[in-house]
Length: 262
Length: 335
Image (cartoon, rainbow over all chains, first blue to last red):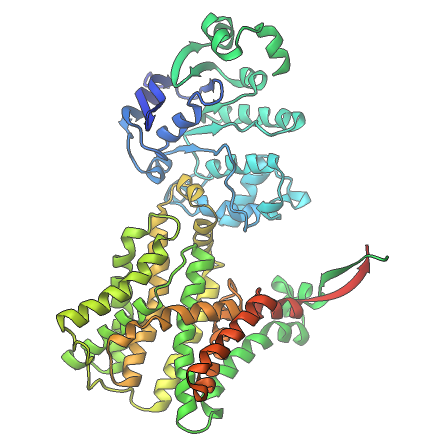
């Protein structure tokens, strides 16, 4: 593994009119790690994802992917390089069955080059590859879930479908925008091993979460945002012990008490 | 009081004809092929059945409108672009074919295909600026172009000005004219139906469903929108190119708004999202408007009544209704 970080963000700033959504945020992501980003509502977590993946243009600052400047590139080009994202509000193709949803990413130039998640540079039949990917991330093939219309699927499957869309591109990084939110406890419990498996396969993950307990279990490092500014970065214990974080994120309450709700 | 509910169940034969099992026997085969054969044979037989000189000509006009309705349905229900560009496509294709024929002496059978492709390229390039936008912009711009182009031709007195281009060659004979348009309509119709179920067609439908997700999948949304606009405008330009050779005249009336509005009405009547529906809608609407010609201006009233009736009582469209009756049976069950 090289010393160069896979993703480097320098002084990223974004303003919406007079509102400063991101204020000179800088951080690095190393190859193969899971970086958790937490922060209260409106602290700019999703804006970071949008800026990195090119869905909105940053006001200033730079984003480097493997040393290459990708600031201001079109969203589809950034995805084509292997920096993929999920959406907090799921965006499946509701008029198509689940496995046909994967035809679209598998039709992209990147999937043709890489052959999809498991494909070794060669793309097989798109229907088969799509169903295989869905089965690996938890769509039970025997119960015909992959063949159901996306509009009839519950939230848990739609969150997995978001991940599947990224995996179809054989990504280097996945920016997960709240994949745990809206899921039941048992659904989250089955999601955590999946995230760990993705990391073992060498995929770098940035996870934005409100579910702290599960995030702390999988993440190697945590970054805390508040009002568009980076408060602190470090291991979960360090972050939780930090006075500024306690103040900004949890108010004056005892951290242990809040953790028991999380 | 007893509550009852209408239950719809797929017919056994519908289930039996899914996929490979359709080859089980002549019953299953004919269940699948008869409706399609009915349409193909029916359309091909129409010029033979129709008496006189007048009605065969109407059939050709029906086919041209059907091409426009098909292009509207394809763009609106499979790519998510609401197009009011029928007049734009007809005008562009018509003028190009007219110029190719009169200025360069090209045979109509050669001028029409060239006008179809080059007209589609011109239309796509002119519409490129509004493809990245969502919402009503595409509809407005497609509606604006025919108005602008007609005024430019009028004001600058180019391309024949208000008199139009005269002395355009007609097709070799009436049979060639009719069957050329009908066969190309059938090709476009079945081609489009096949396209929307291919993988690339799924991408088109995905652009309609959720363009952000398509971008996140590493694909340029605008490229696919442009490709779809090219296909749709090729249908319209072909219609326009044929029209000038049928009338042996091409002028500003090629940009008439009828070409934009009537296909949409036909799509409402025939059923949007079925591709065949708009063609059937044109087969009903255009002859009706010809039949009502005797009533003078009063025909607009009848015409509107028919439209309102459809919107109120059968808003799903004839084809959706027909498909449901064909594939499913209904029964009342106790709740």
